[in-house]
Figure 1 (cartoon, helix red, strand yellow):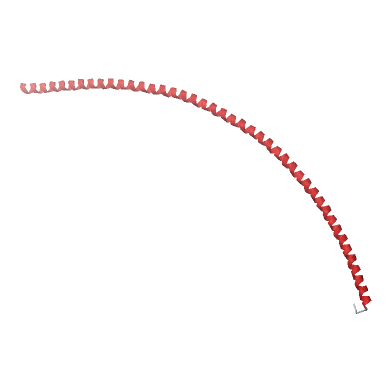
Figure 2 (spheres, rainbow, N blue to C red; figure 1 turned 180 degrees about the horizontal axis):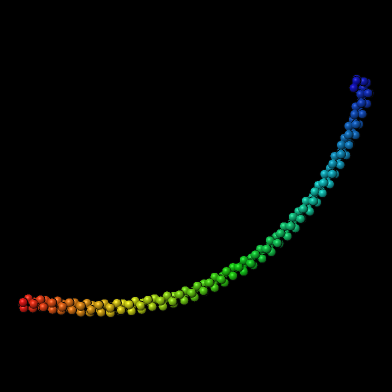
Length: 161
């Protein structure tokens, strides 16, 4: 801008001030519009967040209920299995005790039988030992007798001859 009169310069500045005022008004309007948009988005987001929060709460409650139901169902099944295992343990314990008693009885009977056979065999061995001893004594007696007879015959033959 060239240097003009003071009035021209003031008029120019007034024009600029009006333009700035108008721009300031437009800026205020734009800021107001932007503020309203932000408020609208904030309300919309708040509504969406609230809806999402409610949805999460519903899912949490639903899942919690399902988990509780599953826990109760599984607890019941586990208790039933535990009782079944206890019954089997008792049944097997009884069967093992009965088998132990039967086997103990059979083992005792077998032990007594072995003792009887041992006693019988011991008696037979003693009888056989006595019999062999008697036969040995008899055999030795025969041999001594034969020896005496042979010695007597030799002595007799020696004196006769």
